[in-house]
Image 1 (cartoon, helix red, strand yellow):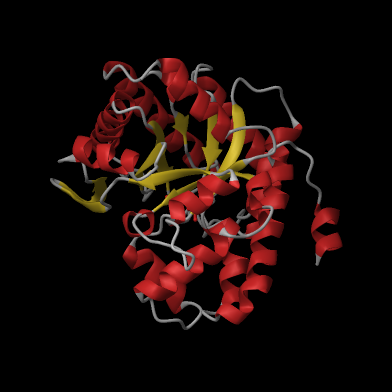
Image 2 (cartoon, protein in one colour):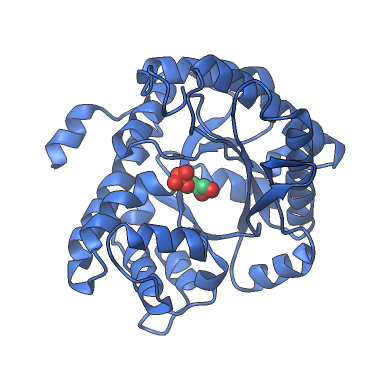
Length: 342
Ligand code: 13P
């Protein structure tokens, strides 16, 4: 595929006012989400829940693309259309999570490495036939004291991210490169800044070494925050914006079309306010948008409660968060807009 075709898809994913819905929870993660609302995680309920989200009228105005799980990209909606086609028909680009989750890292078992490279090229070909135009691979970096993460953990995860990204580009699929520094723990915002910076350095070194075209990918990182158990959590949006931007400006090349943040356990409004604060400054070398899972879905999941009769309320909750984040993505959000809607 011509490089410009990858760039075109990457730019469409970070189009003005739009961002990505991460709906690619693995079977284990979606079970946890369903447990939280007392709903059994059966294939039918997972399909019904995702169909409810994907058929929300007007969502595509704010949602450029949706990341799917392997099961979901093979499922059909109640009208017989594949869920991926429902999204594409509505104007959102279907994407696919292709990593196979994390496992303890050999020789450093308190850390994690992401698996899924074996057979990846063949899987990408199949996903492309099923309609995926972009993919996601998540590496998980924990902060624990001064020793963790190790350099070794950063390097092996960066290497795997780059191998995945190169394979995606070979197959005409835009890779979303996701190195997530977790917000669990009691570390300071300065420590998060340091670890995020080290992680991004390792990732961009590996991407460069493995010939990944930076203008045909997106970066999906954490924001720079204090750990959830640190006394200064949550930090004011202005502080998060400054810490995050100073970190990224020093490391992320301007050739990358967009940075799409994960929410990582931030509250719904917190994730919106932090993104908005970043976009209220600028201009920046890259588009700054969202690829939220929990921060887009939490309210909808609670309203849905596993019952199809609640679909209108759940869709309204999802559309509201999509709209708020669409505004934040252009620095046009304010807390008053939240109040006006509730
Ligand atoms: P959260 O926004 O819930 O962190 O999910 C985004 C994601 O895709 C994590 O891999």
